[in-house]
Each structure stands twice: as structure tokens, then as C-alpha cells.
Amino acid sequence: MGNLSGLGLKDVTEELVKLDWYPVIIIDADLKPTKDGTGKRIAVTFQIVQSGPYMNKQIFGGYNVVNKSAEAQKIGQRQFSDLCKACGLQQETLEGTAPLKNKKLLLRVGPNKDETQNDVKGHKVFVAPTATRQPNLVEQAFEDTPKKPTNPFA
Image 1 (cartoon, rainbow, N blue to C red):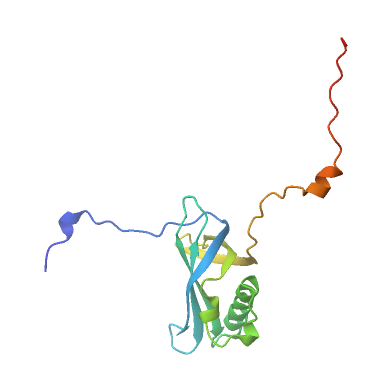
Image 2: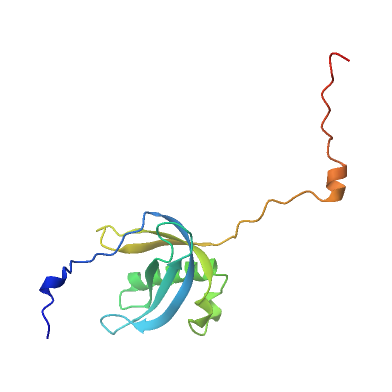
């Protein structure tokens, strides 16, 4: 084994994202057992697609869908339902996590209360910005034409 002390390795902490809404894409989703093995959670990996300091940053979310704590299960199922709605999916008809992959949505992300990691705080439908629509020829024909300035010296 080699000595790592001279490499200048430091504790690396996760870069916390400023609390805000970010456009994201789901790059992975999987049903996994909970840490204690008594329940199931859906682990989702989101990637920020907005240009800026957080571009391509990955955010990890977990949704407890089966848990020995009825309250944790209720919260997890509600949050997962919100995620599905934001993706345009119906939770009741999902037969797996594959339909979640590559879905775009808006994700509210920010530091957890201990400021040790990022937390998913909300989900919204992503609506792509539309280009400014130019009036068509018929609409242009009925627009008020700008009046030419009159020449007071004429």
C-alpha cells in the first residue's frame, strides 16, 4: 500500500445548491430496500440542465413508498405522487421506474436543515419557454399603422 498523506487530499464536501427552482432531467430511478431492510424507497437521480454554476449538478432524492413508520410512508408516497404528476405520469399505472427516466421537470432544491446536503423540496411541471410569436400577415394588415410625423415647415 502506498502512503496517501503527501497527496494533499482534503475532506470534500458536497456543493450545496442555493434554494431555488431548477429545470432537471431524471437520469436514474430505482426501487431499493430501505437502510433497515424493512421497507422500500424509490431512489431518483436528477441532473440540473440550466446553464449556470449548477449546470450538470446531480441531485439525489428518495421517496419512502413502503415504510414501517406510517407517517414516513405517507409523506414518501405523497412526494412520489407529486413527482409523477410533475412528469405527466399517473403513479397508479406505473409498473416500474423506467417511465421516469429522461423526464424533465422543475425541482425545488436547497440545503437540508443541517446544511450538510441538498434536499428535494418540491416538484412542478416543466414548461419550456416559447419563442416570441410574430403576428401573421392577416394580423399585421389590421394593426394600426404608425402615423408619420407631420412636417411643421411644409
